[in-house]
Length: 535
Image 1 (spheres, rainbow, N blue to C red):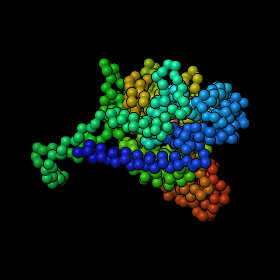
Image 2 (image 1 turned 90 degrees about the horizontal axis):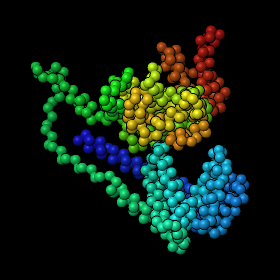
Image 3 (image 1 turned 90 degrees about the vertical axis):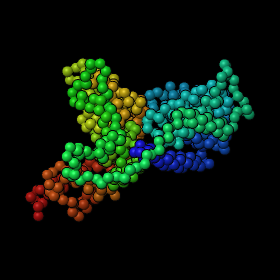
Image 4 (image 1 turned 180 degrees about the vertical axis):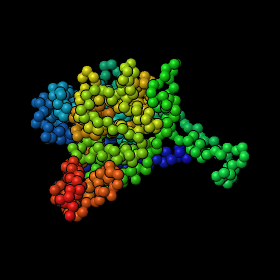
């Protein structure tokens, strides 16, 4: 019966999440008629201009040739786009694709220029597929598959956009050809865009119908006997056991996870980790998200847009956890404090790892073959707290030493655990056993994502955190004073600032980094103890 209640609650949460996702998706695709949809918007279901790939291609070619980047285009690419805009055909789209891909290779390792030319090439590939080139359709499948992979493995699990990317994948698959060599399809014989997408949607619905076997219906509940009065303390008869049945049943139905299974053979798990081998550790539930969002905004109001994005990433999850997230913002924006506040409010154990200056890969553990063997930092969280879910805060991940050194690096060590599909059976070198770390979440902070570009950044969801504003001064002062009071034996030694002190800070601080403001508050508190200012 408890299982039925939990199933209904999860279903209600999924329904609410899906409804919210549909609303967000509808708003996101309300594209004004004055512009063409971006490539990302096309992949998540935006309609080409007037429902016609040809009209969309003409409009896109005009737009791309008037962007700020257009003057840097080489002549070959500029001419190819111009000819494609005049007469959109599959062959001319492939010419644009070839010219743009040549520039992708030429500008390496300039990532910004590479992304710009890559977008042009990918869009030209999609046009070539829609205009009847079966070989281009095969390349379009690869593009959509890569985009879909990004959705699945970087935590962008908004269900409706994800559904529409699947429809796009099936649509471009239908444009491929079995013939060898593939024969181009004339424009007048090419299937209508709406018809092709409608057929793809029907195929996706058929896949959804058979992907998961139907669930067994729960057995009818037996008649419930009247409950006996609850026993009071000392009411148990002689020879009876005074059992806490409520606690036993609660633990029996509580979600849990075996982090370190029983090893095979005669192997033994060393150290403190042996205490949790084979034990089902509790998974702490997700708190009320509305209350969590209000709490975080009260403490960091300047970060409200980022907090809204953060709460959206938690939707639909039964247990406290989230995809890999990196808070990105200017120095002194309070990213580390927000990360700690967020994890504390989640109610799960955490560990803060200072990445700045870390020059080796010891975060991933030390091999059991060495006398200094120890498990990975992320494995230590469930070992020390005996809880299956937790958070590893990677503070200033962008300042970790780059890879390639003799002793490894933080970024290289993170690649394995940052892949969600590998956490279920993560091999810990310090324990020499597989661990189920699917309950562990990664939360990083960074001033810039440039040092993280590549495989590591692909595994993280970026959440922007803005700089504090002048109107946030009262909140910042309260937060700093709360931190200072927590460090002294009696909080009464640190009263609130008076009007003169507050006004001095208000005139001096114009917003921006919190660090000089925090130092100023500490100096004011320190000056109170100076006898020269005691009267």
